[in-house]
Image (cartoon, rainbow, N blue to C red; front, top):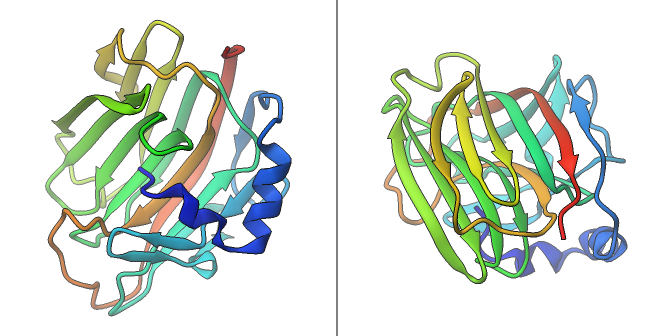
Length: 227
């Protein structure tokens, strides 16, 4: 979830990146195992969000994972986002969130302005087993639901996914359908994003030691062009 994207443009580098993609065509399918951080595909966020500052230096690729660091005794987090836009299709990521109560890990599509177009999976970075699914379209939140995973998401890797079509939206965890909606669906291509951060609406202390949200891989299979 992004609030407010305009902060993302504070750095000159991001102004250049997004100016180049604002009118770009949709990107095709991809699979990224994060053997390295591919700057042709990904950029890093550099802005405040909730209680966090998303520091580009907190994002790297190491050991075959995309890592987002929460430094010890800090509310800092990190964010990676595609340079290109992506539309209808399936999106999946194998994720192990950091254990940092009061923070969340997001895997989502987003395009500015705020509330206009967004599809969210947000995993609570604690042992409560909560995950939140949300959509925004036409300048408003159209759906939101918090579900129980039935496991501690910080203990192991699990696959989080969604299918995005013009007339339906289905969220999955480890291949199991969790929620389907057929109304209130955004109708545009968006940037694919992953982040880990401390929202203002969640209570939690700074982590006592440095912890990492780790993403083993991300896959997108395109199915059709968006309007």
